[in-house]
Length: 104
Image (cartoon, rainbow, N blue to C red; front, side, top):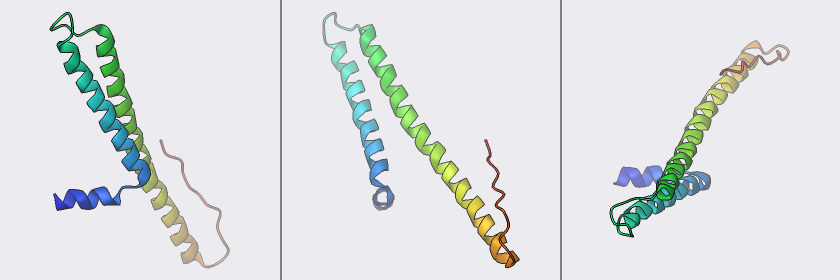
């Protein structure tokens, strides 16, 4: 549990806000599904509730996907910049034009 607390403390405000929004959205969707089981007609979940649940899953998936995509791109960008700086320091002559490749 201590490890989780340390990892949570490393998150930025934006990340905490994103994960909190996902948690609240999924909790609301699950509660909505359970409540619809006890409303008339009993045992039947209306299509609008299922649509809301699907949209909630899509919202949370997009938040996690965007977060993972940009964190991986950030690491690649940092590595490319460090390579460029090392080449410039190694040459010590005139600055060479940057050759940063844009990957897919």
